[in-house]
Structure formats: C-alpha cells, structure tokens
Image (cartoon, rainbow, N blue to C red; front, side, top):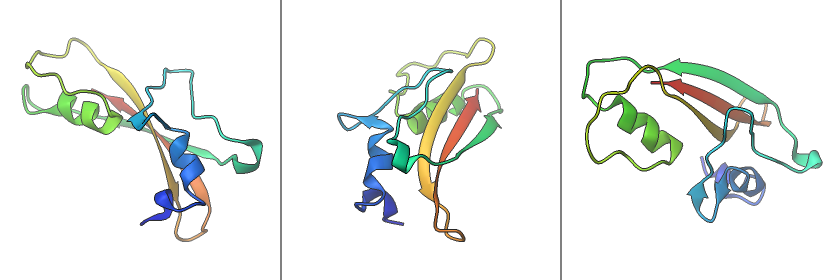
Length: 104
C-alpha cells in the first residue's frame, strides 16, 4: 500500500503531480517518465450516471484533483475527464499506470 511513497514508486507519483497538485492532462497528453521507467498504460472508460444533483460532477472533480464547483449546475451534455494513477500489481510486482476516462 505504501509503494507510491517509497523510493521505487516516487518517480511514478511525481509524473502525475506538479508542486503537490495533480496535473491536468488533456486528451492527447500523458505522464512523462524516463525511458528506464517506462510502463504500460491500462485504459478504462468509466461512465458516471445518476439522478440530478447527487454529486456525480463533484466526485469526478475530486478524483481528478480539480476544485469542486461550489454551486450546483446541471452538466450540459457529457464532460470527459482523464485521470492517471500509477499502481503496482501485486501478482506480477510490476508497476502500471491506469488511465481513467470519466464520462460525466
């Protein structure tokens, strides 16, 4: 569980943070790692659905490291947000980077 804060996991965590803030990546951007630390990226598309005003947009904003909107407003259409998160797979012991596409 503490792999991200260990010396082996710290470069992966640093690739998604800038000045202790989660970096916002565009649709064509991704975390940059040294060639020796290159790992596979596993992509998931997550569709967030539910009743109006229950906190779907606030949940996605929190997971993306963005500020939560202080006032409720309905999301028009679909908002797509990409979140990257490094992890170490227990079975193989190899690190991967998860790319989560949230569709809200």
